[in-house]
Amino acid sequence: MVRWRSGTVTEVRRSWRGAVELDVRQSDGARVRALAYPELVGTPEPGDRVLLNVGALLMGLGTGGYALVVALPDRLPADPPQTVDSRDAGHLVKARYTPLQPILLGVDEEASPHRAALADADDLGGLPVVTADLHSALPAIVAGIRADAPDARIGYLMTDGGALPAWFSRTLDGLRAELAGTVTVGQAFGGDLEATNLHSGLLAARHVLRTDVAIVAQGPGNLGTGTRWGFSGVAVGEAVNAVAALGGRPVGSLRISGADLRDRHRGLSHHSVTAYGRVALAAADLVLPAELPAELAALVEPAVAGLAQRHRIVRVPVHGLDEALRASPVPLSTMGRGLAEEHAYFLAAAAAGRHAASLR
Image (cartoon, rainbow, N blue to C red; front, side, top):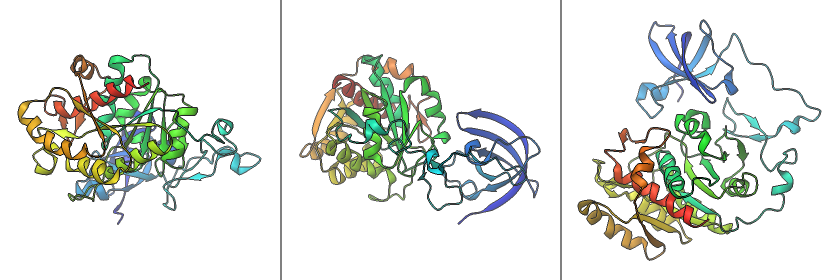
């Protein structure tokens, strides 16, 4: 459960869209790095007393090494501006029935300026949508799209399998100039548009953001137990089904690794096999780089052959993709490993982006 601490802000370190990093001295004298979301708790300043949730930090879980600011109890933020009807400001409740649940304006609510565009929307019109199980694939997919379609409008749909606040992602902040917008779906929040679920989020990407290509992936900090089914990214298979149900073109980014020390992730990750082989009931284009090192290809090809019974396996040329990856405006990193260590992983994601761009 929650491990509570209190402390005092000693320094405001750095900030990015929606988040502020702090140094905090706890009441027992221990010093920790902390993260605050000003939209939820207000903007901390040196000398502010803060209440912290330190549970994941103490357990060494994937929080980026942060305690999380729950409140500035002595300097609470003001209420949102009042409206004639409180629902004019939105009534989508996310992170529902938790102490920090935000109430937001849904993109398709009656009070939304986009209501008319979405009221009867029911089809993606063949929109290519890349699905990936890790947030770290996002910048590589963008790089692959940009390699062949520099002017394409790209939308990102952040699902709720990882971080709920989009503000947690420094990667997403660094990609703002590359994206037409971010839609946070399900319990995730903090995007440019808020959607109830992935289906309404996909329709918003198509009919509001007017995207040429969309990308679906969970936020950073995924949840996993080391078992076949105990991984939040398995939902990528459901994303394939949603895209197909709405008349889009699902393009699967495969999780390939030659560097992961865990047998279940070497070659083609068992999570890709489960998500695309068991969960995805609709056919997708599953993308493989046309060139892989022979040793890695020997691990990948047998697993891919099993997926070919349901999906279309597309082998995409990789010329120019290495340069596109190296030009990414944000660092490439997955599980603490960069482009040099996990070249095949990022190349596969970029190849999926390239293929999606060709389907526009």
